[in-house]
Image (cartoon, rainbow, N blue to C red; front, top):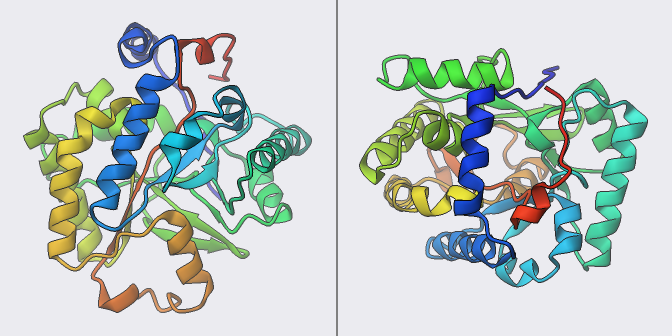
Length: 298
């Protein structure tokens, strides 16, 4: 069982802090519009993005649900703090608050992603006890060693998430479907490596898709709404290429339903699709004020 402890170096933390005023406003509208653009982009391919949302943010900005219309929502904790160093009871308190918050806003979900992808063995026992059907808190590296950005991207990914397992894609842990987040993600590519051009980003995403195609895997992309405008052009190119190649583009909820139905037990995707690709984006803040008082381990 993988246990992840997220860490960031001082330089990376300072760099992101400097970018916050540019990416976030005093209100929620700037990020809300980017979420809406993400939903709109996926809708052009008759697909839905999966947005794991921190429930305390939902409580503070209930109006964001207007922007989220059409998205597949998952729980991303109640407060944005790593579960890696929390006890079962501490995690349970946080998850139960998140479930209650979703219910207050008329939402239900069967999916979970831990803040910072930070988990321990108690996390999975908890999720099963609360009847979640899928979790997307693991991460795996999806770039070939031959790719020119692979070495630097792997260094940053290992620094952030620890040792990366070789196994990719989907696994089943006692009835809890596990969807691994494909690395490098938007944070590593844009903030870590400073790659912002559509041509370079699309080349990397298409290379990751080639890896998924080669072994009929599930490519679960992570594009935080704060960086969506930077990645949107590359995502369009990837989705068009994936569609042309017959890929399945499900939300994580749809993929979990397919697997749990038994139709995906053989590892085959619907309609003979050569691989699956899902677009996800964690929503853990909508305004600068949401970062006030945030604490984390590591």
